Amino acid sequence: MTDPVDSHRSNFIRQIIEEDLAAGRHRRIATRFPPEPNGYLHIGHAKSICLNFGLAQDYPGTCNLRFDDTNPHKEDVEFVDSIQADVRWLGYDWGDRRYFASDYFEQLYGFAIELIQKGLAYVCDLEAEELRAYRGTLTEPGRESPGRNRSIAENLDLFQRMRAGEFPDGARSLRARIDMASPNINLRDPVLYRIRHGVIHHQTGTLWCLYPTYDYTHPISDALECITHSICTLEFEDHRPLYDWCVDNVSVPSKPRQIEFSRLNLEYTVMSKRLLTQLVTEGHVTGWDDPRMPTIAGLRRRGYSAAAIRDFCERIGVTKADNRVEMALLESAIRDDLDATAPRRMAVLRPLKVVIENIPEGQVEQMAAGNHPKDAALGTREVPFAREIYIDRNDFAEQPPKGFKRLVPGGEVRLRNAYVIRCDQVIKNAHGEVTELRATADLQTLGRNPEGRKVGGVIHWVSAAHAVPCEVRLYDRLFSVPVPGAGGGDFLADINPEALTVVTDSLAEPALAGVAPGERYQFEREGYFVADPDSTAARPVFNLTVGLRDTWGKAQR
Image 1: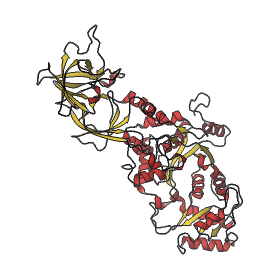
Image 2 (image 1 turned 180 degrees about the horizontal axis):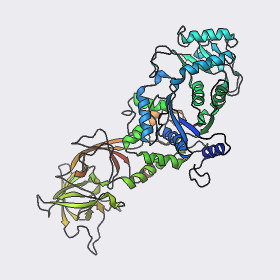
Image 3 (image 1 turned 90 degrees about the vertical axis):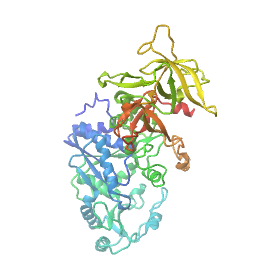
Image 4 (image 1 turned 120 degrees about the vertical axis):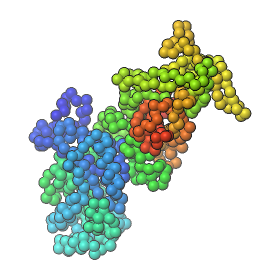
């Protein structure tokens, strides 16, 4: 068990669990991660996954994976599969404890019969708009449905006929009989069942035309699975009395304890499944796994590691306070992880040709280059060096700004892992654009800097004859403001037009030929990149994961 005093991971949920275990209320804890399969998981779900599975690992106990699949017209097996893949990728395993709320549909129906027999549920004839009108407001109590005082026998008959498919969608619903004057609107006779014809459920097919609501299904599913601590986000705090009412009034084997924590709100993105679905369906992104998306699939494709995401979730902690997390904190966690693990390579994103005139044509030297400056165990590689090379266009300036430490006319610079070169001549086209540089290498500077020699800086390069053509996708934040749509505006208007820049003529050192999708590297002096699934053997595609440092805040000032 985690030490409640020494653990740096302590939070109020862990304290509750430790108190429950110490008091003998439970011998083992049981948690669950209960996603609705109506979209891909996002970084906010990662916080819940790490919390629920992490608690089960640390105390120890069990954590179930349960799909709360009560809304079949928005759900799909694609989402079921993606959710399982994401949880596994994050490093967690549910063993044989994968469940669906639909596994309990027959039992849930039986519990509804039990509620009717106890006089705690009734069939209501009000349609959706009438239901809303009868519900009342935050300042006015609701009104009783005309069907609220039906006899138990009539309610049983109507409910059974609802299941048999005798009534059209919206004609009737089953409601809990609680309190239409309750200050908590969730307790004003909430709907427990509604009629849904013509939908094919991804697990039960066409067996049912009567579907339980989430607020009814969720607590009973927890109780049937003997969950000890039902952990959810703060928006469900007002639903807790209904959660407890459902569990208290049917014959379930246990009574879980619902505990709420603050959800993850991240700057420069959206975390609503409805808004994420809109981005996908309207084509503002290329799909759920677009690297600009906050989905786990998108973050994985962008090159984020599972370890870094777990570390991020640990850094932000678990509290009751609603807050908004800076994107820089997530990027810092990713950067820290990749700095320690990503091999170094050289790639020129925007090539500018340099001819080193004192290197003979056809001569090729193999330069030794370390794969990681902090980890000798990652070894070295050889990088071919020849007369013609490419440097990045941004590493040359004819009229350099103050503080520029790269190549200038008549100036010197060191090539990473190679010689110091001097720019002797600038060649331009008819439009006055620089197309080529002529240079001289100091052949006495390989691996050393002669005493007294001052060199402006170090730049990266690739051999022209050996370079691998590649495409580089430079990703930035999806939105240009911290809170998209703030103040009731259209969140789509805040999409960052520079969230993706595609560079098609980049060049990489030959060690990057045939790279496998998912492999991560630091492109020296550029940032951390990952090979995209669109890569081919002849032409790799790299996605920018994160820059070498946080430049966003400076760029916005």
